Image (cartoon, rainbow, N blue to C red; front, side, top):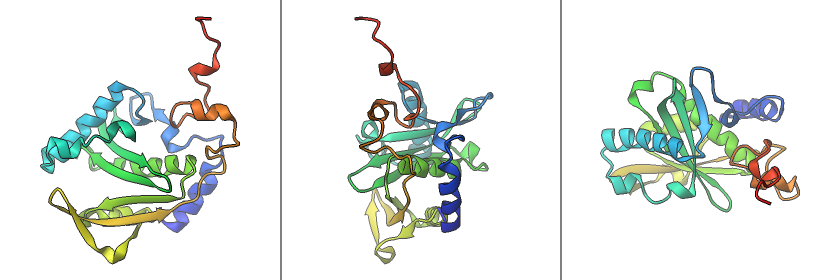
Length: 208
């Protein structure tokens, strides 16, 4: 995020009487953003990725579905229950990596890509991360710079799957209620992005 936008987001998103972007879910007509928790939403995410990266950009299946999808968090945006966009986040020791942002061409006149990135940044801040990282091709670099990402290594490029890419990174401030050791220990067992909502394990077992 740009510096001024980041400051505003820090103030407003720390007020826990309002939901953050990754928490809002779908509205009454099935439009909105969710964290992928089950196979139905996972398949919807995969459909979006296949349409954009394999159908439009000619990536091979093994290049697009690279073995990392079950080791990542995915955000899915739907428009009237139709899968429209997605982004993948992978978490490493000191940084979170933004990957595989995709919006189907039928929905590219909307702000879906912006909503996905903002929600992904919020999620990383809620997990306590201070560094974001990613790769971008030159044609979409300005989009990422809008969110406060900076070019690494003076824009030196490297190649993956015949695409020329540039490294980028951003420093962010964790939310004051980020998940940490020393918080309520129950938060660490709750589903991804639902750290303030009771989960099934907090109910008495029906089998004992």
